[in-house]
Image (cartoon, rainbow, N blue to C red):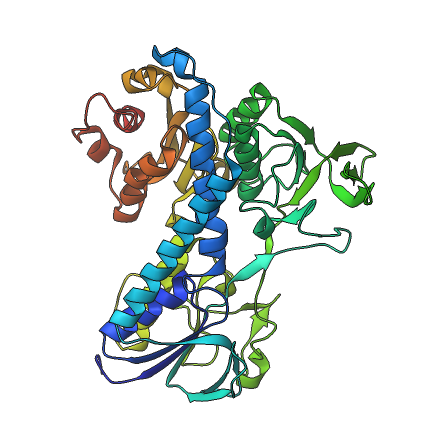
Length: 462
């Protein structure tokens, strides 16, 4: 019955775990949350938020350097690395405290430590302070332990010159020449970030375009931006070894060797080649849980093969986005408390909006043009460049475009890609259109602000 008193035990306090905890508590559940690192999630507060803070600082530096184009006198700026570090720490501390306060206000019990399964209804928490293990019995168990950077055997990570993404928010020192291995979302954000700080950057791209799997036209705009800013691209090269040389001198350098014989040499190297789930310490076998490559196998309700055990966030093997994890956590709480017994809207991961915080920004949602054509599906694709926008000219940045994919028969918006300033904000309009099955006519007849970049959405919908 909805509202029935249940005891939740949640292992992992990232976006998925904390969202589940607060929503379950509001629905009347007794909730215990186990988190060994940082309440709010290491991937969220130690990766996502710091990276965007650093990108914002780099953006401010770039804006100052380009002041003359806005009718201002030239301004010389330089990075204060210590001030940047303090800024990031302040943001992290504030957000962690906000999450902790919210959990406390909802009556959620938080145990600082590691949790593991001991049966289908039992969990053991091992506190960080070394005190005796705490045995817990649960009606509902939720696993949301996140993921960590993937490190291949050939990468001698030292946290100083050879870095994972977790070591670089910010790194111990500003690189003179950073080599980034991996041209996915995280990799290209690092390229933009450190290039804006003044570092030389080389990007090792294993495919024939950056951002494999994304819209080729969007990738082309970003590649050109990188080249315009002096970034060196090693296209079609797969890194296979990293060598740290001159270790006993002040002139340490790294050498990255690729499978085609090309070599990149710099002061630092950063690996951004994906992540792996934090599942090895959970003892999934103790509860008979099915998994694949360390990810817990879940259904459309995020429920595992064991009826009352769920997984959220990166551990679920779905889209590794904080927004997705948060929604999963809320849906799990509702389902476990009996609110989803009848027909209801399930999570549709194909309609999740995502953004890449480069310069220019790239964002997309729903069906991609290339995927539609690859599957033989007939779609209508319209594209309008920001160069036609008065607001883009006012901003002195007319790069990029809006592309909308729609059904040619019904006009329903199926997806879209935006490249340009504030793309991460503008994509929300298309995300709503895709989720609510709005039509291009709905967009065309919307009275957008003028002058505004959003006007291009209506023009692309015509």
